[in-house]
Length: 353
Length: 206
Image 1: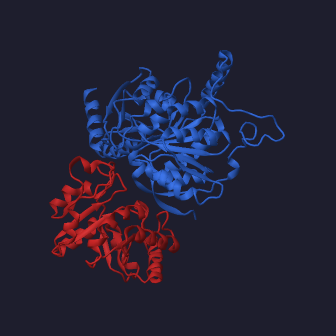
Image 2: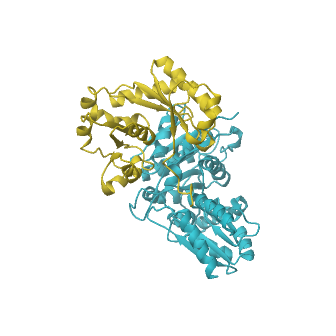
Image 3: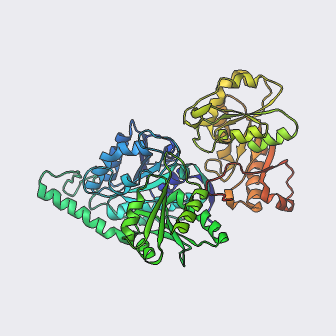
């Protein structure tokens, strides 16, 4: 039987990364993700050949990630809000150089230094390219501690497959809460060989370089177009969860922590005779446009609930393409939306329409 | 800690809880300060907005309260040897009080999965706090996936440690929904039936 453990979300990400073959971690502590840095310090230092560095800053950490990724290692960094903002230049460099890595953002209240409470205000930054230039991150949004495990492992696989940075976009609550988790056996063979592009000893081959620039505009355009073609392929990796979608009166679209809240509201709706469906995007980039478009053909109202002023709602509107009315409910500052609030919002929308 | 305090209060003791958690930013005792106050339990924690910060604040009144022998004072220090460090500043006043220092053990947590890890954690806590652990609280659980078999298996591990280190088990904690099923096992230790006060935002909708 696979051993079960009671883990904090942040600890679970760390163990999942090690499980997936990550042997390099560089980071700087910030609430509410510091336990991840602490966990990696405790674990990696006991693994032969592994490296952990608490860097002098987030900027230093992301550039260390560049180095380890260029050398072909599975590497991770993590932070929250302000720290992720500091990493943006380096993330853009990683994307241009086509270097795989995993970046974890356990979101907190923003903008600015904000608060240390959970939030979802970094959706735009994560999915639309928070740094400069034409690039995207692969963005995965877990909703439980077990999913933090499964999606962290998946993030490493997708990053390697597409040679692109991948992000785990969680929030403080997911990072701090404890739930039981299991780690399935990981086959090392899943990690692809990087011999044909990574740096290292150039004995017997020509020296290589991995750089995030090309001064010749035509050559840089070729690089950007090559990166762009990867993003055209990404929709096949779309992952989402649907709940109670057989014949819903209204559909709620929510991710992460808020989706957990919606599931409680669905049960309340069943008792009160209101059928509430849920579409939970698990990949935020690529975004599950098709399933939402399909829902828009079937229901008149879609409610998007986020712990922000309204960010994912823009993608939902694009997906619905005017075929159903899209409403929004949000809280910010680190306030977690309660089941009562969503329930009241659902009733208000259904009564008015 | 909340459950222990309530039990002490029910035994007509005057109870104060000190939230000395300088490690965890969420799920801290201070979040239940008002509720506990209504129950007659005073909580000492950083005041006002400072309670919402991730700063290692140690309230100045704690020392005086430790010396007040008319009350039972519970100090909740966060999780591991890092959290226990905050206790070291009270070593001069605590050492002569006949304090009880209990290590809460859940063998389903990382870093306390077996007797060797538990002993290491215990020694690290003692070193950073300068205090001696003189009792154990057996708290085997996997959150919502806890069942009686799992408690029994985990508790066996704590018993093993208790024997090895010659430390008494003060309580075995059991969540109230599982209490009725306990009779299948002959636990000889005191049972502390606990209620979960720290709930998640999606747990309830009235």
